[in-house]
Image 1: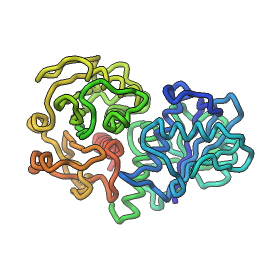
Image 2: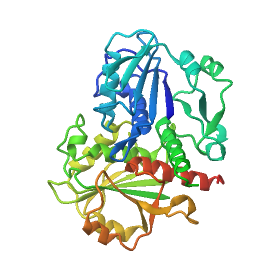
Image 3: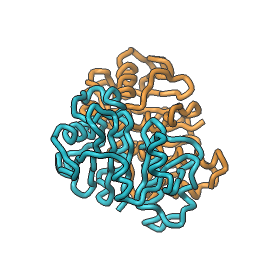
Image 4: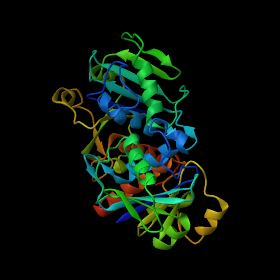
Length: 191
Length: 191
């Protein structure tokens, strides 16, 4: 099981946005692509992956969405499809525990602080250790959207190991794809 | 300079489609994500990359679109943004030579047969040689969309080397991301 979590600093926390303008919903398009990169294989889904989206853009308090690869239905690879599920998740009332909004899609109140206590996240950072050289791959990876982690977030993650996928700075979804490839290779005896 | 070409077997060859339903335009969403994967870095573009889309879905005869990383403007990472440029390219009359439809976006009639004579394409194939073991990286990569290459296409590419990015079959855009990572690493002395 691998877990990916992406912090959406400006991403709306209610469902009041248009699927025709995902960038305008606090760069929700970034998060949609991260769901795709986390969960899709060609003509299949990564059943052993879960993807957390930490939404911090208001107008409501922080929320966390969870997409479970082994339970999800009705997800297609296009951005609108992930966007529609995000909108559905944000459209229902939720409390402090995950509530299912659609098959495999869950939502709760709260953000990164609690999530950091639940998984042993490695932080993806272009200045981190080369992921190819790590003897044992982490099981959970934390990424930021188009913005850097805030000072408060950096404090929360300061004890976490930091890894890099390569010498140039990539979009979060591209980073997830490269990590997944490294996991695939190791799981199948490719060097 | 690296070139990526993606064959869109069902992708429309006219601009008569809605940006609200890119999957319905012959899985144009697949090609939009391939443009993104080819050209985007975090907060920058890959200026030394070009991306060809070979559109075969009719109603008009085959067309080829070209996105040049060093000339393109007005491209954002979301699918609709690439879709809008594709629509623009398909909306203008074109002939046998590339005509510029928008900065960095070009269109011509014709498909894979001519393109194969212009670049030394390697074919991406999950049964191919592991790309990490290739002593010299190819400069051009050919991929298919959600469908396999047709028999006629396989005949056209039968002399080309075949490479794989890993042990599981990935979407075309994810494959491009992994290839680009391998190129980045080699260009910067990472192993």
